[in-house]
Length: 248
Image (cartoon, rainbow, N blue to C red; front, side, top):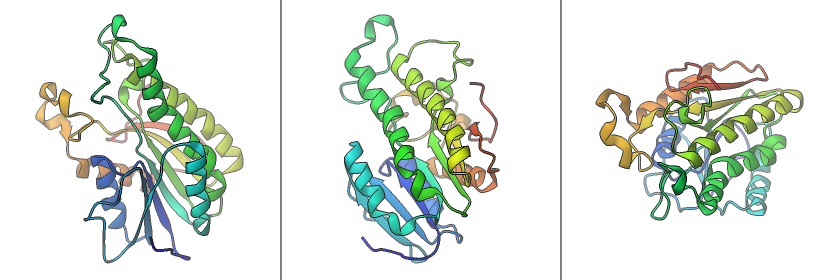
């Protein structure tokens, strides 16, 4: 890993997924960003390189002490980070599946999903606030989901995933109020990417119209555009890929 002591930087957390990789590529193509920092449990893929940007890749577990160590490692970037994208999330795994009925709910699944979708993103924002504080405009986007909307829930099911994203939205809303007082240069966005063609959505794509199944590159471009235009207003915005507000 190389170190950079000047210029602006972008930070992608939970960097190994398909959408995160596309976001990294979009940020690395941004002439206003000098360094892209990716944080993941996994090693850097071979294609993670770009001649115009200095890439950094940090491997870590997602315990709070390990995350704090990452933030300490990034102290040379204090006040120079202009973009943060938090990509952590889980919907299913080999041992976990979205619940269709009450009988499918389990404490173990709830804890696993909430840890990934709510706890880890919030811990990052707890740990990062001193690193982000400064005169430099900074926009933070956390990947949420439309199904986290309480007002828009008409189908039920998916108890853990829906609830973990609703909890994430509340955490982000609460954080945005405190950030508005203490880290006034930061804007936080809760972002719904739509159904993106990644491993997370793969088992559920059959029922999605072709024009509503987005490539990771399309979503990454939309998100980066939204972040570039966002107003630093001390408020949380809950937005979809089309920059439209979602009801809480």
